[in-house]
Length: 253
Ligand SMILES: Nc1ncnc2c1ncn2[C@@H]1O[C@H](COP(=O)(O)OP(=O)(O)OP(=O)(O)O)[C@@H](O)[C@H]1O
Image 1 (cartoon, rainbow, N blue to C red):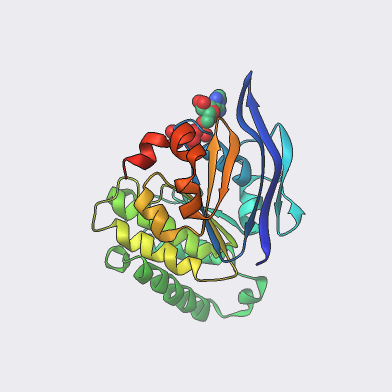
Image 2 (cartoon, rainbow, N blue to C red):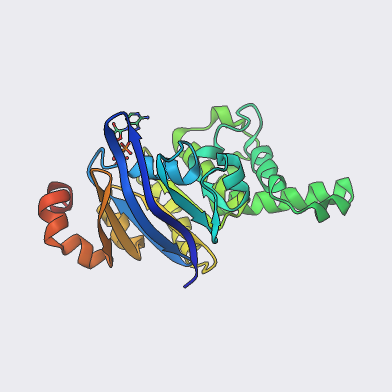
């Protein structure tokens, strides 16, 4: 499997507190890695360092071999790093379809400019509709984003991400706040994305049934440090995770 994303000794300090502590990890194409750990372990901060929301104190982030540590979040996104939440704050007054169409347009190669305006518009609409059908949002295509239910907003996050067609998908609790009938749509989509061997998926998730179903690999953060990394069954069963780090959360499943 090809290495797509790599962090090396990645560290961030907030005053005296080390929130992410020397994390070195490689994420490969075609692999879904679940990132777990107790509350405050550093999972979201690790995501923020990778996607560029906060600068690292030290260490590097490489995407397809290129050091992206000094790039802005939007430049990282353009290079193929896709994080769901970056995408919702686009145009709340525009419709669901218009937002997805703009996301597709944003990553279009220049050659598309050679299309006639009308042909280009039709092609974009067709493509956007196929993304919306995948997340079952085609029924609300003409609704302004600001009027969407919470569950549909979360689905739109996934749709926007698919429309951007990144190499690396980053999901931070993608089904949080979703109803029992909405969550499977998103989880099925993530499973579909995983089947695409050109991509890698990072998933911060607390629900162990979701992790068991989707993850090829689990990494465990504790006090900002990487304390376990491996096959899901082995990591979940390991004493270090059960007793010292995740005990109650995992035992409860
Ligand atoms: N900007 C910041 N300034 C100061 N401390 C921060 C900042 N961001 C995060 N922290 C601290 O870093 C630690 C890690 O937080 P983080 O949100 O990454 O944990 P988490 O594993 O995602 O937790 P949860 O599962 O509760 O979301 C916490 O102690 C948090 O208070």
